[in-house]
Length: 161
Image 1 (cartoon, rainbow, N blue to C red):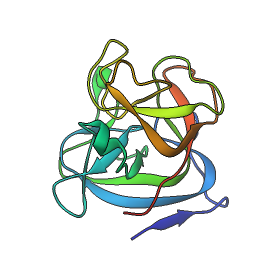
Image 2 (cartoon, rainbow, N blue to C red):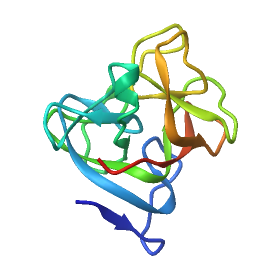
Image 3 (cartoon, rainbow, N blue to C red):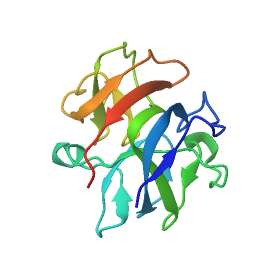
């Protein structure tokens, strides 16, 4: 079931996984493994499960980007994350600060990492090219900011799964 956030609610901005603008459409999924905030996830092994993408074909099925939660697992150098079997908030329509590699520009296509490559190793992170076939283009998404501090704003309008 989806929930909606309105402009009347306080939103923590300028951090990976934060909503950058409202309103947004948010769905809930269960993390099937530890999952960083601010990365794209795809369907997992069951109807409500989600995982980071492991193939270009999986990227086309993206559910959305994981959102920052005050109640999260400490992640040390890797960042904050949802633990295995934790309920995740996933934005499928809206603007979110996501983990970004390289130097995206406003209006550029969004590519989602599904395998480690020369440009990075965080699965589900975004970039502006396919990094020698280790990232795939995500239809329905575009950069709406340049990258700063390893994150960028992405606007998405992904189909409901």
